[in-house]
Image (cartoon, rainbow, N blue to C red; front, top):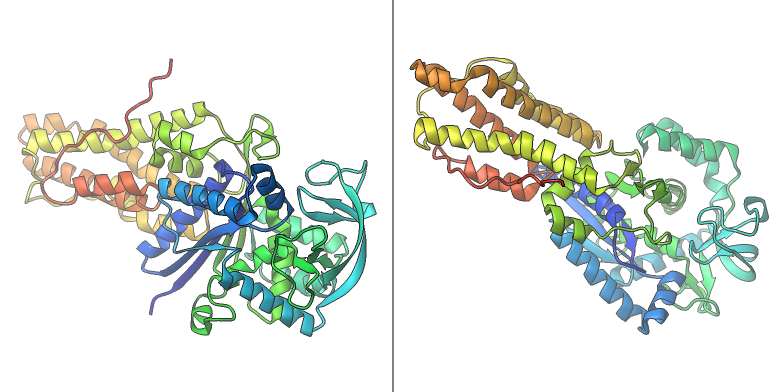
Amino acid sequence: MKNKFYITTPLYYVNSPPHIGHSYTTVAADTLARFHRNMGDEVYFLTGSDEHGQKIAKAAASAGLSEKAFTDNMVSIFIGLWKSLDISYDDFIRTTDKRHSAAVELVLTILHKNKDIYMDTYEGWYCTPCETFWTDMQVSQDCCPDCRRALERIREDNYFFRLSYYQQWLIEHIQSHPDFIRPVSRYNEVLSFLTTNTLTDLCISRPKSRLKWGIEIPFSTGHVTYVWFDALINYISAVGFGYDEAKFKKYWPADLHLIGKDILRQHAIYWPIILKALGLSLPKMIFAHGWWMVGKDKMSKSRGNVIDPLRLVDAYGVDTYRYFLLRDVPFGLDGTFSNEAIIKRKNSDLANDWGNLTHRTATMVEKYFSGKLPEQGSIKENQLKRDNDNLEAQLRKALEAVDFTAGLDALWLVISEANKFIEDTKPWNLLKENKTEELNSFIMLLVSVIRNVSRALTNFMPQSAKSISEQFASNIIKKGVPLFPRIEVK
């Protein structure tokens, strides 16, 4: 029986086009989905779009479009980017989908019936860009604690979800499940927050007098659902909650929610409590990665310093871009983006190391064996062979821990050893001295390494790895053009 692996990205908010941060999460999720498929697991890889709320309504009005027309256009841009980045998702859910809105209404109905949702009057501060309420104690200088923009004072009747009731339960769950929130720094952050603060109940509605663009509260025609409550439900609405019991039973709970650290509180506090109140299992792991910085600033739409991923794909190639995202900074930490950094990775790792190994080996097969691998020859035991044989186990250990750096380090250790093996062995001397058995063993080991590494790299760089796998698939090796030509820096 196959193991299932259900992995999700967050739903991306489509008030503006995607940037590097969106592609970072999605490429990471795609790499893990491909790895688990290659391991024989039954994978369900979900991504999608978050389409309700004030920011969408405002952006649509500015564009002179209806909210649905605006989001349809934006969703097509996101889907186009995922195609360009070779993202192998199984499902793309939109919060405007009927399957999703029906699930949200069902969740609200259950929680209201169970007295976990109640009506109250809210008076306090509200941040429209973040779509978040703040208390007087949380606010200083009348600006949002998160985005530092101006707040407005409001008073209105809304529905609230009893977060506070479940605080102690959540603390105990986190303490007894050390892998529930990763990396460790985020685990500590959430636990510290929960043990030093008292949770306030979550306002989960907006009055239609202020906002019409959202899913209507099923027990109040005068309110729509708060965008963050609505969006989180996608993780269960996509896999059949309320309409396909067999599918839901098969895939839930999620094995991994992959998110950016800026939305950790919603996923590590709101979401587990919602699931607990519904009587559902919790996801096995929530992994919050770091931000991409430009200089010393976080890359964000509000700062206007976002970089278009398609421009980078056009300039450097899709696999170079994918490789850079996962190699340049340990997953979980913040990284600094620069064109110089991506050029350095391409020239050093991909052109000099991996590209050089494949091209040199194909050239030697052509020169020494007329393009056909020797039929006789056993591979002699050495350190390169041992590391090559151990590569799959090393990669599995790394990717099951969501450690792309360790996985790629293991691959590049073997690549570097193979290049050194060529220099140390000096095959041209073996040919000169008629050492046929040694030369056969030498070339067979190099080809074995290339086949093994390219098979592992299909998780990270599917297009180029496929090309190299095909080039070295049979006993007849065809030398192709270098896949990673160097970029000359002026």
